[in-house]
Length: 145
Image (cartoon, rainbow, N blue to C red; front, side):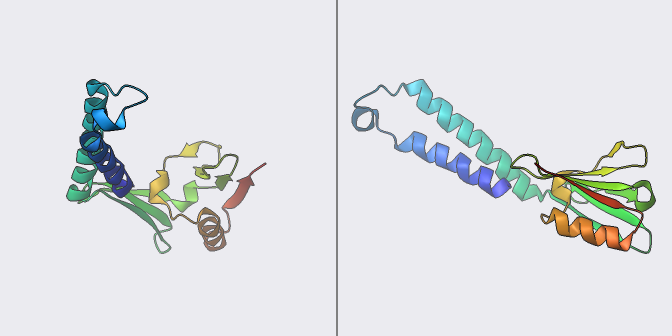
């Protein structure tokens, strides 16, 4: 994601520097402040994304079967590991109502267990199926149209 933000920021900066109001803004006006605003925002996004890439922001998760735990990390190295006991998880809910599929972990009372989306593998359905096969007490629910 940081690479995409970096690229888009650089496109805004490049565009702000290459627009020539005398030749490119014939049918409509190109105010100078608009070029500065676009270039400034592009530079801000590019700088933020570049710093995230430089610092090495990392995220991910793994299931430790021997500990019966889902271990996830998010942050700058060394990223702190967070542990969710698989005994606390009763439902994996896959929500496909919109274009963005969401995955939620629910405890036996139906409360959501915090786990950032980017820490999970991109193939939610397959991951949920494998976890429920490994830990049979976990039920997978798919919500869609």
